[in-house]
Amino acid sequence: RLDAERDPLEQLERALVAGNRADEVASRCHLDRHQIGRRLGEMERKGMVRVTANQRPTPKGRMARCYAAVPPSEVRGAS
Image (cartoon, rainbow, N blue to C red; front, side, top):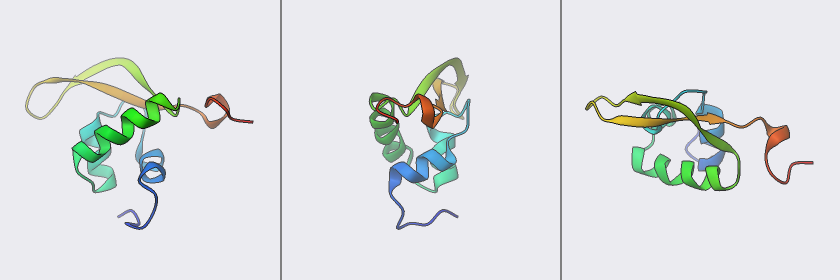
């Protein structure tokens, strides 16, 4: 289980693996999928994650975007 006192963005970075949907990332972080969806949007705007070309069905059968972490050396503003 991830440390509840850690920054949510840090938790996402650690849990985000290429090809994961938001609900899968939420499950790994032990957080609500709505919380994760908001954070993924923030991270995408900051260039920390990208939407992959893949879409996979959710447990309810809807197609969902998959996300992958961007290597730190490629994040906008990285030194």
